[in-house]
Image (cartoon, rainbow, N blue to C red):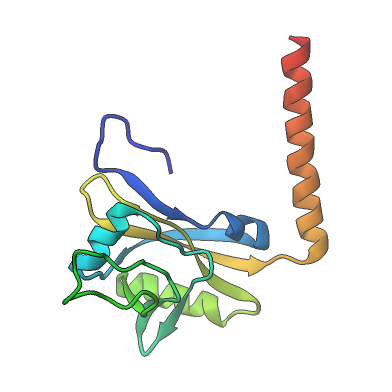
Length: 158
C-alpha cells in the first residue's frame, strides 16, 4: 500500500516482514480492529508487534490472537492486557470467504500490516497465506539476491 502524500494521519504502526518470507500470500484484506482507548494511545506511541500473531475465525467472528500492544503508562487504572484477543471487523461476505479459505489445506490468516488510515482509524491488513517449504524459501532468497546483484551491475555500468 502506497503512503498517501500530504496526509499526516497515515502511519504504519507495525509490519510483519517475516510473513512474506514464511508464507506465500495469495490475497490480502483490510479489516478494522476493535481497541480500547489506552490501546490506541499506546499504538500511537509505538512498540507494537504483530510478528507472532495470527487471525482465526471463532464462533462466527474474526479475532486477532497474540498481537502485542504495550501498556500505556498514563492509563494505570483503566489499562489493557498486552496480548488479549482483539476482534477484527469485516462484513459477512468477507468473513465467509476467510472461513472457507481457512478450511482449505494449509491455509493460514496472517496479519501483514497494522496502521492508521488517512482518517486516523486503526486498520490491519490480513493475508490469506499458504506456508512455504524450505526449498521455496531458498528460491525466494536466491531470486531476491539476483535482483540486488542485477541492480548493482546496472548502477555500475550506466
